[in-house]
Length: 197
Image (cartoon, rainbow, N blue to C red; front, side):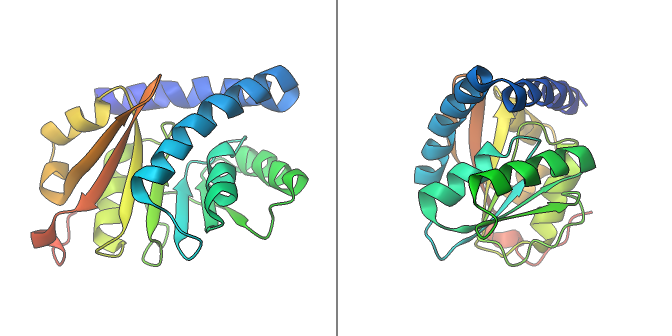
């Protein structure tokens, strides 16, 4: 599907940018500044509190999203990635930032990870394929949990128009960012007990 190809390409673009940011301070400051603006908008959109449990799917080698969420809200954050090298870089960065007690990093895939205890679930732009992850979340997350799914332009809304995801989730809000959109997704009320495969 075209949406997943765009996400796959963005995965490699972000990997390259993050690698530069890890090695060159100028790129680190630039990437962090851009991402902070976006994540603060998302945090305000859903009103995360210190009591909330947050899952971040797709941390990459430079886990600025989980860091910003933990620092701005004081919530506990678990972040996962299915690339073991990315996890090692991310863990090293979290240790350097002194955030080991606030951010837990795990090697895992978004399709099978246990999500029933999280209040908010962030899905990064570089995560693909997106449909099986959204189906897994629908089947296993708390009924009142909220998903913040980053999209490349309007790809998530377009995907919803062409798939069964439209029957599973409501798009509660869309925030336009410089290169991405942030989609706030909630389960549709009448489908809480239904399993989608």
